[in-house]
Amino acid sequence: MAFPPLVEPVAELPDAERTRTARHRVLAGFGETAQRRLAAAHVAVVGAGGLGSPVVLALAAAGVGTITVIDDDRVEASNLQRQIMHRVSDVGAAKVDSAVRVAADLSPTTRVRPVQALLTPDNASQLLAGAHVVIDGTDTFQTREAVAAACEELGLPLVWGVVQEFHAQVTVFWSAPPAGATPVRLADLYPPDAGREAPSCAQVGVLGALCLQVGALLSTEAVKLITGVGEPLLGRVLVIDALRGRTDEVRLRPEDAKADAAAARAPQPAAAASPAGQLPVIPQLSPAETLAAQRAGAVLVDVREPFETERGVISGSVLLPLGDVLADPSRIEAPTVVVVCQVGMRAQRAAAALRAAGVEASVLAGGIEAWNRDIAAVQA
Image 1: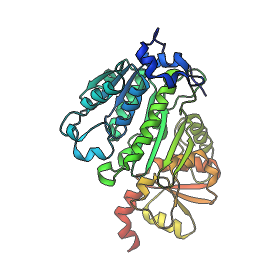
Image 2 (image 1 turned 90 degrees about the horizontal axis):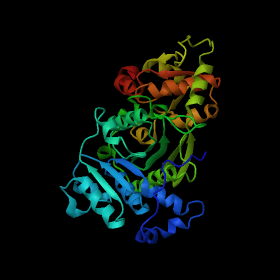
Image 3 (image 1 turned 30 degrees about the vertical axis):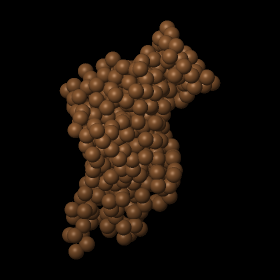
Image 4 (image 1 turned 45 degrees about the vertical axis):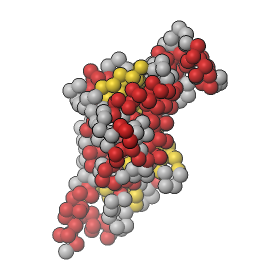
């Protein structure tokens, strides 16, 4: 679904800028008007690291008028493998200073507003106010939640991406999209606190080249929203597996999730009723009960992301990320399933969707953490 452009165009471009952006202006369906919209746009980029670096480069090259770059960190030598905005000579300097330099080198008409500060729930709305689009390139889920909450409060579209190891996700969240579009929020993809289970890039690593690919996608989504060209990723999650060279798309529709939950709330022998608007009460199994169910023929479905399951799974589990389960619960053909995630929250959503599809689904209470904690006693 194409959206109306977010930004009114400037009256005209300087001659030098018209020359610099000539290849944009001859794009079919883009033209000079879209380029003038970019010149009038204000994009806030949170994070000047692996994702923020290519984003700043791409936005400046595209001719975005104002870029606010928010980051409290300083350049370290280990950043240079993926954070292409910085140079060896920048080690020890503020990351936002690199943004000022590279943008000026690429686009003299682009203004970079460096903000060397840690974005928190207390200051997020103030730091992001005035932007047309926000791009989240941060690397901790606590900050991502603060950015998302502020964007919801301000009604701003949030272009969102995450990279870890060889995998990535890209999407758009927007609590107040144009008429006819369904609002989609971070909590629709990751329930509150769910992402805090993930390890840091320092612990498991990240492919540097993949950061460039994802940064380019994030920039493209921002350009589409600003100019009204193309179909933004609202309601769709792009999932990238760099090792297999594969890109998949998963639908993300909150209304569908509500429908699944409503269907799952219908009377069923193994599930109790729940208050309106909440997920049904799903049977919760201890590690010992889960092991017994598996031995009796139940299929264990692990709905964590690949970067999580690579650290270890329960033997015999079927690995299927939550987004894939919600997109098509019918792909699980087993009559009895126990759903596994890190601590149990994502498993609850998956189990509700599976029960709505006619599968007898339970949840491993406490998730893989409970399993790992109790496994010695269970198997003794």
